[in-house]
Amino acid sequence: MSEIPAAPVIVADEPGTFPHGVLAERHPAILRQIAEALPYGPGQRRALDALLANCTEGTITPLPADAHDRDRWAAWGMDAHAGRSWYDVPWLWSESWFYRQLLHAVGYFAPGPWQGIDPFRPAKLAELDAPATDEELAALDDLEGRPEDERARALLHGSLWGNRADLGFRLSAEGAEETTAVPALVADDSELLWALLDGSPAGTLCLVADNAGRELVPDLLLIAHLLAHGRVARAVLHVKPHPYYVSDATTADVLDAVHRLTGAKGAARVYGQGLRAALTDGRLVLRAHPFSCAPLPYSDMPDDLRADFAAATVTVLKGDLNYRRLVGDRYWPPTTSFAGVTAYFPGPVAALRTLKSDVITGLEPGTEAALVAEEGQRWRTGGTHALVQVRT
Ligand SMILES: O=P(O)(O)OC[C@@]1(O)O[C@H](CO)[C@@H](O)[C@@H]1O
View 1 (cartoon, helix red, strand yellow):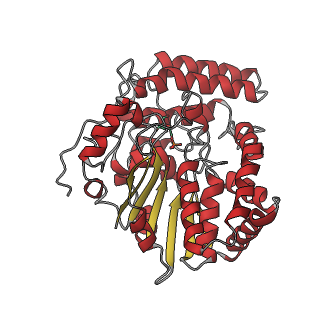
View 2 (tube, rainbow, N blue to C red; view 1 turned 45 degrees about the horizontal axis):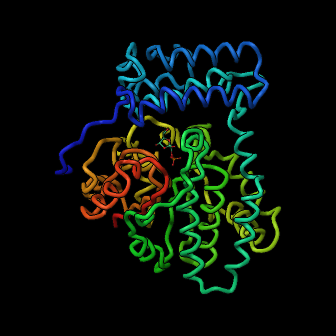
Protein backbone atom coordinates (compact mmCIF):
# COMPACT_ATOMS: atom_id res chain seq x y z
CA MET A 1 0.00 0.00 0.00
CA SER A 2 1.18 3.51 -0.81
CA GLU A 3 1.92 5.72 2.17
CA ILE A 4 1.16 8.87 0.19
CA PRO A 5 -2.05 10.57 1.36
CA ALA A 6 -4.58 10.67 -1.48
CA ALA A 7 -5.12 14.08 -3.05
CA PRO A 8 -8.54 15.33 -4.29
CA VAL A 9 -9.82 13.69 -7.49
CA ILE A 10 -10.23 16.24 -10.32
CA VAL A 11 -13.86 17.12 -11.03
CA ALA A 12 -14.87 19.70 -13.64
CA ASP A 13 -17.48 21.52 -11.59
CA GLU A 14 -15.74 24.85 -11.17
CA PRO A 15 -16.13 27.43 -13.96
CA GLY A 16 -12.81 29.00 -14.93
CA THR A 17 -10.79 25.84 -14.30
CA PHE A 18 -9.07 23.88 -17.07
CA PRO A 19 -11.27 20.75 -16.67
CA HIS A 20 -14.46 22.82 -16.75
CA GLY A 21 -13.28 24.46 -19.98
CA VAL A 22 -12.76 21.04 -21.57
CA LEU A 23 -16.37 19.99 -20.88
CA ALA A 24 -17.96 23.39 -21.57
CA GLU A 25 -15.90 24.47 -24.59
CA ARG A 26 -13.62 21.77 -25.99
CA HIS A 27 -16.26 19.05 -26.23
CA PRO A 28 -18.77 21.28 -28.07
CA ALA A 29 -15.97 22.37 -30.42
CA ILE A 30 -15.13 18.72 -31.15
CA LEU A 31 -18.78 18.00 -31.98
CA ARG A 32 -18.88 20.98 -34.38
CA GLN A 33 -15.62 19.90 -35.97
CA ILE A 34 -16.69 16.35 -36.76
CA ALA A 35 -20.10 17.50 -38.02
CA GLU A 36 -18.23 19.66 -40.54
CA ALA A 37 -15.61 17.05 -41.40
CA LEU A 38 -17.91 14.26 -42.55
CA PRO A 39 -21.25 14.20 -44.45
CA TYR A 40 -23.22 12.57 -41.69
CA GLY A 41 -26.92 12.06 -42.41
CA PRO A 42 -29.88 13.63 -40.58
CA GLY A 43 -30.12 10.86 -37.96
CA GLN A 44 -26.48 11.17 -37.01
CA ARG A 45 -26.73 14.98 -36.90
CA ARG A 46 -29.74 14.78 -34.61
CA ALA A 47 -27.80 12.42 -32.36
CA LEU A 48 -24.81 14.80 -32.32
CA ASP A 49 -27.10 17.72 -31.41
CA ALA A 50 -28.65 15.63 -28.63
CA LEU A 51 -25.19 14.79 -27.34
CA LEU A 52 -24.25 18.48 -27.35
CA ALA A 53 -27.28 19.26 -25.18
CA ASN A 54 -26.68 16.28 -22.92
CA CYS A 55 -22.96 16.83 -22.35
CA THR A 56 -23.35 20.52 -21.54
CA GLU A 57 -26.65 20.56 -19.63
CA GLY A 58 -27.79 16.98 -19.07
CA THR A 59 -26.98 14.05 -16.85
CA ILE A 60 -25.33 10.65 -17.30
CA THR A 61 -27.85 8.25 -18.86
CA PRO A 62 -26.77 4.58 -18.72
CA LEU A 63 -26.17 2.69 -21.97
CA PRO A 64 -29.13 0.67 -23.26
CA ALA A 65 -29.39 -2.97 -22.18
CA ASP A 66 -28.26 -4.22 -25.60
CA ALA A 67 -25.11 -2.07 -25.85
CA HIS A 68 -22.15 -4.35 -26.58
CA ASP A 69 -20.10 -2.82 -23.77
CA ARG A 70 -22.84 -2.20 -21.20
CA ASP A 71 -21.37 -4.64 -18.67
CA ARG A 72 -17.93 -3.17 -19.09
CA TRP A 73 -19.19 0.36 -18.46
CA ALA A 74 -21.25 -0.87 -15.50
CA ALA A 75 -18.02 -2.27 -14.02
CA TRP A 76 -16.34 1.06 -14.76
CA GLY A 77 -18.86 3.02 -12.66
CA MET A 78 -21.68 3.93 -15.07
CA ASP A 79 -24.55 2.94 -12.82
CA ALA A 80 -23.04 4.74 -9.84
CA HIS A 81 -22.82 7.97 -11.90
CA ALA A 82 -26.28 7.66 -13.53
CA GLY A 83 -28.42 10.76 -13.12
CA ARG A 84 -25.51 13.01 -12.16
CA SER A 85 -24.31 16.01 -14.15
CA TRP A 86 -21.24 15.43 -16.36
CA TYR A 87 -19.62 18.20 -14.31
CA ASP A 88 -20.05 16.39 -11.00
CA VAL A 89 -18.42 13.03 -11.73
CA PRO A 90 -14.63 12.56 -11.98
CA TRP A 91 -13.36 14.54 -14.96
CA LEU A 92 -11.45 11.52 -16.28
CA TRP A 93 -14.71 9.59 -16.27
CA SER A 94 -16.83 12.21 -18.03
CA GLU A 95 -14.21 12.73 -20.75
CA SER A 96 -14.15 9.01 -21.62
CA TRP A 97 -17.93 8.93 -21.49
CA PHE A 98 -17.99 11.77 -24.02
CA TYR A 99 -16.02 9.76 -26.59
CA ARG A 100 -18.16 6.65 -25.98
CA GLN A 101 -21.31 8.74 -26.57
CA LEU A 102 -19.85 10.48 -29.61
CA LEU A 103 -19.05 7.16 -31.29
CA HIS A 104 -22.59 5.97 -30.56
CA ALA A 105 -24.03 9.15 -32.13
CA VAL A 106 -22.21 8.62 -35.43
CA GLY A 107 -23.05 4.91 -35.60
CA TYR A 108 -19.53 3.67 -35.01
CA PHE A 109 -20.57 0.58 -33.07
CA ALA A 110 -23.88 -0.28 -34.75
CA PRO A 111 -23.99 -2.79 -37.62
CA GLY A 112 -24.45 -0.73 -40.78
CA PRO A 113 -22.61 1.46 -43.25
CA TRP A 114 -20.99 3.74 -40.67
CA GLN A 115 -19.75 0.97 -38.43
CA GLY A 116 -16.04 1.41 -37.72
CA ILE A 117 -15.76 4.77 -39.52
CA ASP A 118 -13.41 6.94 -37.46
CA PRO A 119 -14.93 10.46 -37.12
CA PHE A 120 -11.46 11.89 -36.55
CA ARG A 121 -9.82 10.24 -39.56
CA PRO A 122 -9.97 13.31 -41.86
CA ALA A 123 -8.04 15.38 -39.30
CA LYS A 124 -5.57 12.57 -38.60
CA LEU A 125 -4.84 12.05 -42.30
CA ALA A 126 -4.48 15.78 -42.94
CA GLU A 127 -1.82 15.89 -40.27
CA LEU A 128 0.02 12.86 -41.61
CA ASP A 129 0.02 14.42 -45.10
CA ALA A 130 1.08 17.90 -43.92
CA PRO A 131 4.34 19.43 -45.22
CA ALA A 132 5.54 19.64 -41.59
CA THR A 133 5.57 15.83 -41.49
CA ASP A 134 7.72 15.79 -44.65
CA GLU A 135 10.16 18.16 -42.98
CA GLU A 136 10.35 15.98 -39.88
CA LEU A 137 11.00 12.89 -41.98
CA ALA A 138 13.63 14.65 -44.09
CA ALA A 139 15.45 15.59 -40.86
CA LEU A 140 16.11 11.86 -40.33
CA ASP A 141 18.63 11.98 -43.18
CA ASP A 142 20.70 14.49 -41.19
CA LEU A 143 20.92 12.02 -38.31
CA GLU A 144 22.47 9.31 -40.46
CA GLY A 145 26.15 8.85 -39.75
CA ARG A 146 25.86 10.19 -36.21
CA PRO A 147 26.80 7.84 -33.32
CA GLU A 148 24.04 5.40 -32.36
CA ASP A 149 23.43 6.85 -28.89
CA GLU A 150 23.14 10.36 -30.32
CA ARG A 151 20.52 9.14 -32.78
CA ALA A 152 18.68 7.28 -30.02
CA ARG A 153 18.55 10.41 -27.88
CA ALA A 154 17.35 12.54 -30.78
CA LEU A 155 14.56 10.05 -31.49
CA LEU A 156 13.52 10.00 -27.83
CA HIS A 157 13.36 13.77 -27.91
CA GLY A 158 11.21 13.60 -31.06
CA SER A 159 8.85 11.13 -29.41
CA LEU A 160 8.58 13.28 -26.27
CA TRP A 161 7.87 16.56 -28.04
CA GLY A 162 5.69 14.81 -30.60
CA ASN A 163 3.16 14.71 -27.75
CA ARG A 164 2.49 18.40 -28.36
CA ALA A 165 0.85 17.31 -31.62
CA ASP A 166 -2.52 16.50 -30.06
CA LEU A 167 -5.47 17.57 -32.19
CA GLY A 168 -7.92 17.95 -29.30
CA PHE A 169 -5.45 20.13 -27.43
CA ARG A 170 -4.93 22.36 -30.47
CA LEU A 171 -8.63 23.21 -30.47
CA SER A 172 -8.12 25.20 -27.28
CA ALA A 173 -4.43 26.01 -26.94
CA GLU A 174 -3.50 29.07 -28.95
CA GLY A 175 0.15 29.94 -28.48
CA ALA A 176 1.15 26.53 -27.14
CA GLU A 177 4.11 26.39 -29.50
CA GLU A 178 5.80 29.35 -27.79
CA THR A 179 8.73 28.71 -25.51
CA THR A 180 9.32 30.34 -22.14
CA ALA A 181 12.30 31.37 -20.04
CA VAL A 182 11.97 28.37 -17.68
CA PRO A 183 13.69 25.17 -18.90
CA ALA A 184 11.38 23.19 -21.13
CA LEU A 185 12.02 19.88 -19.32
CA VAL A 186 10.67 20.10 -15.77
CA ALA A 187 11.99 16.64 -14.86
CA ASP A 188 14.46 14.54 -16.83
CA ASP A 189 15.18 10.94 -15.79
CA SER A 190 16.18 9.97 -19.31
CA GLU A 191 19.52 8.47 -18.18
CA LEU A 192 17.55 5.96 -16.07
CA LEU A 193 15.54 5.08 -19.16
CA TRP A 194 18.69 4.55 -21.26
CA ALA A 195 20.09 2.30 -18.54
CA LEU A 196 16.98 0.12 -18.91
CA LEU A 197 17.26 0.19 -22.69
CA ASP A 198 20.95 -0.68 -22.98
CA GLY A 199 20.30 -4.08 -24.50
CA SER A 200 21.88 -6.18 -21.75
CA PRO A 201 19.97 -8.35 -22.06
CA ALA A 202 17.71 -7.11 -24.85
CA GLY A 203 14.19 -7.50 -23.48
CA THR A 204 10.72 -6.22 -24.28
CA LEU A 205 9.64 -2.61 -24.52
CA CYS A 206 5.97 -1.86 -23.93
CA LEU A 207 5.04 1.50 -25.40
CA VAL A 208 1.57 2.78 -24.58
CA ALA A 209 0.88 5.12 -27.48
CA ASP A 210 -1.01 8.38 -27.32
CA ASN A 211 -1.74 10.42 -30.46
CA ALA A 212 -1.64 9.30 -34.08
CA GLY A 213 0.12 11.28 -36.82
CA ARG A 214 2.92 13.55 -35.70
CA GLU A 215 3.26 11.83 -32.33
CA LEU A 216 2.93 8.23 -33.49
CA VAL A 217 5.45 8.65 -36.31
CA PRO A 218 8.31 9.56 -33.93
CA ASP A 219 7.16 6.84 -31.50
CA LEU A 220 7.47 4.31 -34.31
CA LEU A 221 10.85 5.70 -35.38
CA LEU A 222 12.09 5.26 -31.81
CA ILE A 223 10.81 1.68 -31.70
CA ALA A 224 12.41 0.92 -35.07
CA HIS A 225 15.74 2.26 -33.85
CA LEU A 226 15.67 0.34 -30.56
CA LEU A 227 14.88 -2.90 -32.40
CA ALA A 228 17.42 -2.34 -35.16
CA HIS A 229 20.24 -1.64 -32.69
CA GLY A 230 19.48 -4.49 -30.30
CA ARG A 231 18.49 -2.22 -27.42
CA VAL A 232 15.28 -4.26 -27.22
CA ALA A 233 14.47 -7.63 -28.76
CA ARG A 234 10.75 -7.06 -28.96
CA ALA A 235 8.27 -4.20 -28.69
CA VAL A 236 4.60 -4.25 -27.73
CA LEU A 237 2.72 -1.17 -28.90
CA HIS A 238 -0.54 -0.50 -27.07
CA VAL A 239 -3.07 1.45 -29.15
CA LYS A 240 -6.73 2.29 -28.58
CA PRO A 241 -9.41 -0.22 -29.60
CA HIS A 242 -11.54 2.63 -30.96
CA PRO A 243 -11.20 6.38 -31.70
CA TYR A 244 -10.68 8.37 -28.52
CA TYR A 245 -9.61 11.84 -27.35
CA VAL A 246 -9.74 13.04 -30.96
CA SER A 247 -6.35 11.93 -32.23
CA ASP A 248 -5.46 8.87 -30.13
CA ALA A 249 -3.82 6.15 -32.20
CA THR A 250 -5.70 3.03 -33.28
CA THR A 251 -4.43 0.07 -35.30
CA ALA A 252 -5.58 1.82 -38.51
CA ASP A 253 -3.46 4.82 -37.57
CA VAL A 254 -0.39 2.63 -37.05
CA LEU A 255 -0.89 1.15 -40.52
CA ASP A 256 -1.31 4.65 -42.00
CA ALA A 257 1.87 5.84 -40.28
CA VAL A 258 3.92 2.84 -41.43
CA HIS A 259 2.55 3.32 -44.95
CA ARG A 260 3.57 7.00 -44.80
CA LEU A 261 7.11 5.97 -43.84
CA THR A 262 7.50 3.23 -46.44
CA GLY A 263 6.26 5.71 -49.07
CA ALA A 264 8.81 8.35 -48.01
CA LYS A 265 12.35 8.84 -49.30
CA GLY A 266 15.75 8.31 -47.72
CA ALA A 267 16.19 7.22 -44.13
CA ALA A 268 12.45 7.47 -43.36
CA ARG A 269 11.75 4.76 -45.89
CA VAL A 270 14.32 2.46 -44.29
CA TYR A 271 12.68 2.97 -40.87
CA GLY A 272 9.31 2.17 -42.45
CA GLN A 273 10.62 -1.02 -44.01
CA GLY A 274 12.14 -2.05 -40.67
CA LEU A 275 8.79 -1.52 -38.95
CA ARG A 276 6.93 -3.52 -41.59
CA ALA A 277 9.39 -6.37 -41.20
CA ALA A 278 9.11 -6.25 -37.38
CA LEU A 279 5.30 -6.36 -37.54
CA THR A 280 5.47 -9.24 -39.96
CA ASP A 281 7.92 -11.38 -37.99
CA GLY A 282 6.42 -10.61 -34.56
CA ARG A 283 9.20 -8.44 -33.07
CA LEU A 284 6.65 -5.61 -33.02
CA VAL A 285 3.25 -6.60 -31.65
CA LEU A 286 0.11 -4.45 -31.46
CA ARG A 287 -2.36 -4.58 -28.61
CA ALA A 288 -5.75 -2.83 -28.43
CA HIS A 289 -6.94 -3.64 -24.92
CA PRO A 290 -10.41 -2.35 -23.88
CA PHE A 291 -8.88 -0.89 -20.70
CA SER A 292 -6.88 1.50 -22.89
CA CYS A 293 -10.15 3.45 -23.29
CA ALA A 294 -11.28 3.02 -19.67
CA PRO A 295 -12.24 6.06 -17.59
CA LEU A 296 -10.07 4.81 -14.75
CA PRO A 297 -6.51 5.07 -13.46
CA TYR A 298 -4.01 2.31 -14.28
CA SER A 299 -4.02 1.29 -10.63
CA ASP A 300 -7.37 -0.39 -11.52
CA MET A 301 -5.94 -2.29 -14.50
CA PRO A 302 -7.13 -5.86 -15.10
CA ASP A 303 -4.85 -8.85 -14.56
CA ASP A 304 -4.08 -9.58 -18.22
CA LEU A 305 -2.86 -6.04 -18.82
CA ARG A 306 -0.90 -6.14 -15.57
CA ALA A 307 0.80 -9.34 -16.79
CA ASP A 308 1.72 -7.66 -20.10
CA PHE A 309 3.38 -4.74 -18.33
CA ALA A 310 5.01 -7.04 -15.76
CA ALA A 311 6.78 -8.92 -18.56
CA ALA A 312 8.35 -5.78 -20.02
CA THR A 313 11.85 -4.46 -19.36
CA VAL A 314 10.16 -1.08 -19.18
CA THR A 315 6.72 0.30 -20.04
CA VAL A 316 6.79 3.75 -21.59
CA LEU A 317 3.53 5.68 -21.30
CA LYS A 318 3.12 8.51 -23.75
CA GLY A 319 1.22 11.70 -23.24
CA ASP A 320 -0.87 13.69 -20.85
CA LEU A 321 -3.86 11.42 -20.49
CA ASN A 322 -1.71 8.35 -19.84
CA TYR A 323 0.14 10.38 -17.21
CA ARG A 324 -3.15 11.30 -15.53
CA ARG A 325 -4.11 7.63 -15.51
CA LEU A 326 -0.67 6.50 -14.33
CA VAL A 327 -0.37 8.73 -11.27
CA GLY A 328 -4.11 9.20 -10.68
CA ASP A 329 -6.14 12.17 -11.91
CA ARG A 330 -5.74 14.19 -8.75
CA TYR A 331 -4.59 17.57 -7.55
CA TRP A 332 -1.30 16.20 -6.17
CA PRO A 333 1.13 18.57 -4.50
CA PRO A 334 3.73 18.89 -7.34
CA THR A 335 6.56 17.53 -5.15
CA THR A 336 4.67 14.26 -4.46
CA SER A 337 7.01 11.34 -5.16
CA PHE A 338 6.55 9.94 -8.69
CA ALA A 339 8.04 6.63 -7.51
CA GLY A 340 5.55 6.59 -4.63
CA VAL A 341 2.43 7.17 -6.71
CA THR A 342 3.53 4.62 -9.33
CA ALA A 343 4.66 1.98 -6.80
CA TYR A 344 1.66 -0.21 -7.75
CA PHE A 345 2.83 -0.48 -11.39
CA PRO A 346 3.98 -4.04 -12.11
CA GLY A 347 7.44 -3.21 -13.48
CA PRO A 348 9.74 -0.34 -14.43
CA VAL A 349 7.72 2.51 -15.88
CA ALA A 350 8.52 5.73 -17.72
CA ALA A 351 6.31 8.71 -18.55
CA LEU A 352 7.05 10.86 -21.61
CA ARG A 353 4.65 13.76 -21.55
CA THR A 354 4.16 17.38 -22.44
CA LEU A 355 2.19 19.14 -19.70
CA LYS A 356 -1.42 19.73 -20.80
CA SER A 357 -3.45 19.32 -17.61
CA ASP A 358 -3.15 20.18 -13.92
CA VAL A 359 -1.78 16.83 -12.78
CA ILE A 360 1.89 16.80 -11.84
CA THR A 361 4.13 14.84 -9.47
CA GLY A 362 7.85 14.42 -8.90
CA LEU A 363 9.00 18.04 -9.18
CA GLU A 364 11.89 19.43 -7.16
CA PRO A 365 10.64 22.25 -4.86
CA GLY A 366 12.89 24.73 -6.69
CA THR A 367 11.51 23.75 -10.07
CA GLU A 368 7.93 24.33 -9.03
CA ALA A 369 8.83 27.69 -7.48
CA ALA A 370 10.64 28.83 -10.65
CA LEU A 371 7.74 27.79 -12.86
CA VAL A 372 5.19 29.59 -10.72
CA ALA A 373 7.34 32.72 -10.52
CA GLU A 374 7.67 32.79 -14.28
CA GLU A 375 4.19 31.77 -15.41
CA GLY A 376 1.73 31.47 -12.53
CA GLN A 377 -0.07 28.17 -13.14
CA ARG A 378 0.02 28.27 -16.94
CA TRP A 379 2.99 25.87 -17.13
CA ARG A 380 0.66 23.06 -16.07
CA THR A 381 -1.64 23.19 -19.08
CA GLY A 382 0.07 25.22 -21.83
CA GLY A 383 1.95 22.36 -23.54
CA THR A 384 5.20 24.36 -23.40
CA HIS A 385 6.88 22.09 -20.85
CA ALA A 386 7.60 18.39 -20.84
CA LEU A 387 8.95 15.67 -18.58
CA VAL A 388 10.68 12.31 -18.64
CA GLN A 389 10.01 10.50 -15.37
CA VAL A 390 11.14 6.97 -14.62
CA ARG A 391 10.52 4.53 -11.79
CA THR A 392 12.90 1.58 -12.00
O1 LIG B 1 -3.01 12.58 -23.81
P1 LIG B 1 -2.66 13.78 -24.63
O2 LIG B 1 -3.02 13.62 -26.05
O3 LIG B 1 -1.25 14.20 -24.43
O4 LIG B 1 -3.48 15.00 -24.07
C1 LIG B 1 -4.85 14.88 -23.86
C2 LIG B 1 -5.43 16.20 -23.52
O5 LIG B 1 -5.31 17.11 -24.58
O6 LIG B 1 -6.74 15.90 -23.28
C3 LIG B 1 -7.10 16.21 -21.95
C4 LIG B 1 -8.15 17.24 -21.98
O7 LIG B 1 -9.17 16.79 -22.81
C5 LIG B 1 -5.85 16.65 -21.21
O8 LIG B 1 -5.44 15.64 -20.37
C6 LIG B 1 -4.82 16.83 -22.25
O9 LIG B 1 -4.67 18.19 -22.40
